[in-house]
Length: 267
Ligand code: NAI
Ligand code: 15L
Image (cartoon, rainbow, N blue to C red; front, side):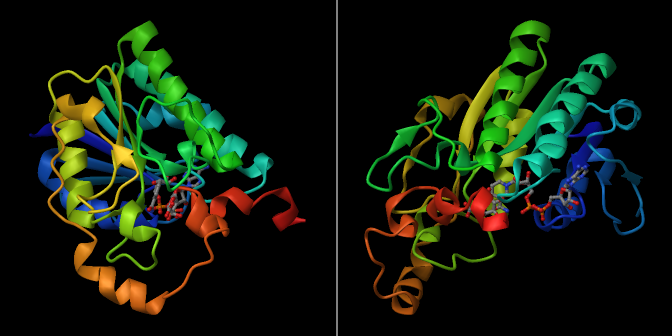
């Protein structure tokens, strides 16, 4: 797998900084972009500061780009007015620029919060009706619909990854089911970039955890094979969090605490 030029948005963020050195292996040039300052360009890198809500900046950013890893945007619950320009207008600007530039494929960092109101007592496939748990989750649902539209209308392919919790190690009980390791995230991105035909495919981004809420069997053509599991951390996590009230959102909903964050939290 070797692209001429890959674009990574959100490169100043937590996952962007983790992915930047890893994704260099898969391209001649890695163009990294964010609103915030980034480390200077190393060999085979280009660094571009660009706000997603700036249409002209997005058109310039997509020049010569074969494929995109779209990780930029608001990544937690915020008031709608904050989510709108970055995740909704921004996603549109990115897709429109990609279409006009002839980019072949986008890997979209969607989120488990698109279906966060499903219960922890159920296992769901990617094609269930979305039940977003936040404005943030709603914006990711919009991103997935945008991806579907740009494939159906223009043939621009996307793999939308409903990422669970991508952290070095699982921290709480919910993470025992939602965790994806950094190495598995890299495996998933490589699969999403290299699968021969994806159309618009949706896969959940989780490791091979013993307890899971997500069934990726409809995304087998993407070829993602997780190799890590939260199981080695289970005993330590359960000892740290011995009891969790089953009526609390952290224990009830797949989206955990996101279901109770809302406009009042920001008043
Ligand atoms: P982060 O918040 O650390 O990084 C997001 C980056 O996007 C930041 O560097 C920020 O400056 C940039 N950004 C925000 N608004 C922008 C705008 N208007 N224009 C240009 N850049 C902008 O988030 P993190 O954790 O690195 O997540 C990356 C992506 O993955 C996000 O899209 C997030 O929604 C998604 N995701 C992450 C999960 C995780 O476990 N970390 C779980 C599910 C989804
Ligand atoms: C997300 O979508 C967030 O970006 C991340 O910060 C975590 O909260 C993650 O979901 C999660 O559900 O654990």
